[in-house]
Length: 395
Image (cartoon, rainbow, N blue to C red; front, side, top):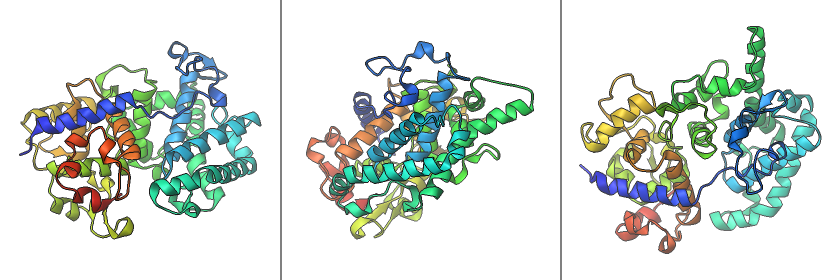
């Protein structure tokens, strides 16, 4: 059995870092939202229900975050968010109002594709060299398109077009049934029993699901933005609170939580290799590769279901996530973070922001991360005792 208090201390410290260093998409200066924020960039929450054309401000913001979540998957988050922002602004200046009128994106697909391609090249000129230095790569490898594709049309229609089509389809379906709403996407999303169930439906719903255009990590990132970062949710029950969705599992999570030793307290190295979470010799430079997304569905054998954290996990699963109708008999690793944070002042959003900050500023994906300055180095097993956790593993 592990020391649950020690593990809680580590996650709380990371969440504390996250609360001090939030990482929201910077959308206050987007053309569609120029009146949604005050002079200090603070969202005017009392005006979210006001209409902006046919739709409320909440609906328009939700549509953008829905799109951003799909696009926010790639090697350079700074560049990706710049691309999304610049293309959106450029399209709006040409009266192609993709959030207010999603069909505009397809009606003017030639302009849409051109703006995406040209903006990508401009960002590459600005970001490629710095990105290559940070990641010990080559500038010519800089590419913000998913799957490392070079075909702009496929990227535009698949990654941009699919999430833009969802609110349009919802609007059309309402009209077919003789109904209307100024918040069709919001109504649909909040119709789920929890934000976790909503995030699963984002990908899997037979009619409105985004399918392979979005991964589990991105769906949970959207839940974080909607519930935690921008607090857009109209619902106030605990199933739509800060512990009601899973931690977005990305490379930063894998790297930080493996190097600190947190994951090794939940399962053995042999377990992770058997699960393909650790892929020996398949990482950058021939090191071992950490694929944290393969954690999904895996169970920890070190946290008893009737321990302090185990009992919290039961509540999380049944009342917050709504993934279980009755109390589970075992603990799945990807959901245990919520249990550790239950009873603290921190949410999954704080933990994710902390991991992103530590992973991108200190715990970088190479053999010489900035461990001496890292705010959690005193709690890090790799830094304190087992340097091989840092030297021999990559994401």
